[in-house]
Image 1: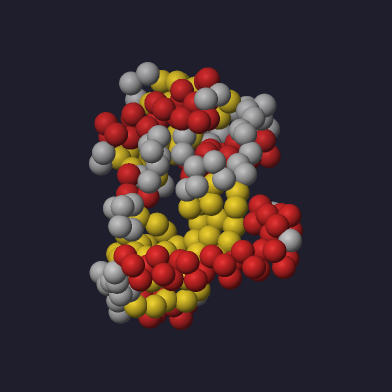
Image 2: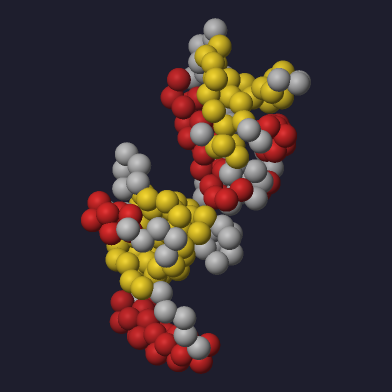
Length: 217
């Protein structure tokens, strides 16, 4: 499990471990090797719940809170957020209303260094040029291929979902993989200038309204 900080990048997530079950309807107690950072993030979560200022959370953190809120609504119970220093710092029930996220989906290319492959489901973690890490879904065949390419920088083509407001990638599925080749800036702009007319032509043929509806469906 991770407790997300307010700038919840993959590489800034804080790992926490379940250490005990409390004698409650469902009481889970966690510890972290980065306890000071975890308590700060936990405090931010409490502030968000108490004030309704969901803009303090990243898109991914809001998604995680939504999962908890859906559980609370399903069970018609009360969730309490506690820490070891102050006890209960926030609580909420099924009345908690989290603003829905508007999302955009489409095809894109991601370039990154392969830093982890595997898991119970085919997953690949990429380190992007910004230093952030992105966990990606993929097929078993692609995961096997990338298992032999740890720490290589690769080019991935696939399907992505973005947060409409922040433009943050919420999820990415790798479909095909290619080698990364450094090129001149002039080559990049030339390729971009060729791609734009083709894309705009496709949009005009299909209709801009239909394209936008497909992207935000």
